[in-house]
Picture 1: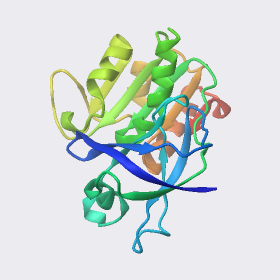
Picture 2: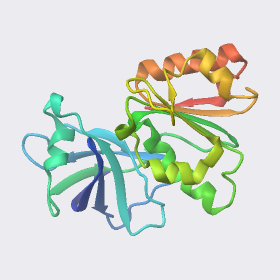
Picture 3: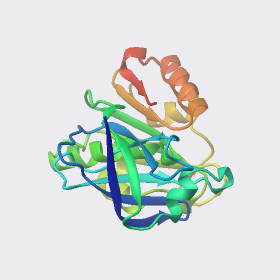
Picture 4: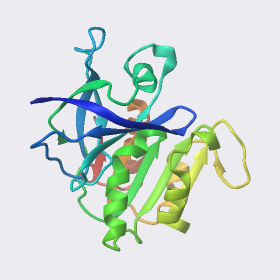
Length: 221
């Protein structure tokens, strides 16, 4: 099902990531970890839908999305970054992207953190986040989405690694097999992995190499 809605607000979280606040259509429902497809209701983009994970709680009166902007593509994300409140959108019904199945480790790269944000907040509200870990890869410090909130949520269980910038407060390099071994004490747990396709494929292979069961590794759309 498709719903015509409007943008209510837009704000920048980093130099290339925006938070969109949208109308919630009458009758629209979703669960934590679900995604929608979205496009601008304009002649240029009306048929060019792209998937985004909802980051608001299902009980919220508005819908919220975190969108990474790729201006070099001159496509939908660039147009969304230039959109104004009241601009019309079309969204689809929600569909499953990630499902929380139990305690484990979240592993993300860049905007791949977004599907997990509502899970983090929900687990924290239930005081169940404490035994989870987050391993998060970015290029530079200014690319880290919701950095302060993530530090506050995970504290000593937050591991952030930078690939293009050396900073004494962060690990440097990439999330490879040896890095995973240094941060994960046991592989008999659930793993939630999101990022570019190659990133997810490589992390999944390394987790299995470390002893994780493939059935316990979730990757996204």
